[in-house]
Image (cartoon, rainbow, N blue to C red):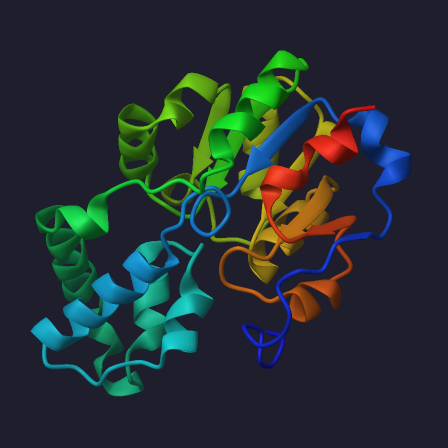
Length: 238
């Protein structure tokens, strides 16, 4: 884990090594939370409500942000003191209940540039996929209630594979999209996203709309580093 991963500028725009790989990209696979969905605040809020409901010590905000992208129970367990980690299943169940009960937390909120971005990718023949630590049910819900479902050629969920940055999620996404891993441009806002795609030999893009800052992502040397994913057409348009 990079120290102070949330601190620093969020407007870095760097083509570190993307240009030579641009022509091989046939599919773009996105993380959801913090990448296409403006949901980091919702996750932090739901986690805090869960810990308050169970009268547990409140974790720091950066600690909560650091688990985004992992399997839910695995992430919540890491926030619990050692002596009560055995309660992780209970904590997870309460989180899911609170999430389901509160429309303002459950709502799928897309960044404003998402429709134009996905329309561009589809019109230019790129396959579009998603690789998220959410459960399959959670991803399907967001696909059903937003335009994401109109731009879905395949996805892999967190409850199907080991947590990021294990490369299995990207490899399964590649199979479902009918492409090779090296033909995928993987886009995510956290270190575990960039490392997931790097570990699977995909082309990687870090964005600064969610968990990690630009300087923190830069240390991982993604092929491309952008303030937000809506800028991708400038690099894929040629």
